Image 1 (cartoon, rainbow, N blue to C red):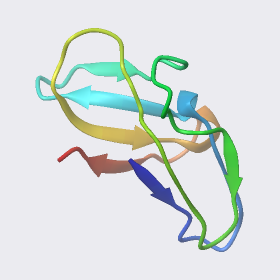
Image 2 (image 1 turned 45 degrees about the horizontal axis):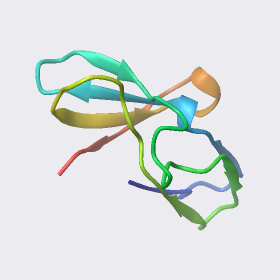
Image 3 (image 1 turned 135 degrees about the vertical axis):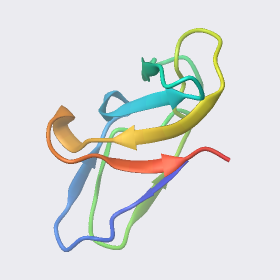
Length: 81
């Protein structure tokens, strides 16, 4: 997935800030250090982006991924295609 900072302030990205919702509505936390291409832990300035993999444990079909900066606050959701 790709995260782009469309805001006016820097944001912190961390694989632990993502959850995956499957097609049955079940929620899965991100499983760090499973994929060599996982999302990096970075700070994105306005206009910057970062691309990486978000992996969940177990067997399921993902429907969308939700990002919440710092584990609290409003989430931003992106569909899985």
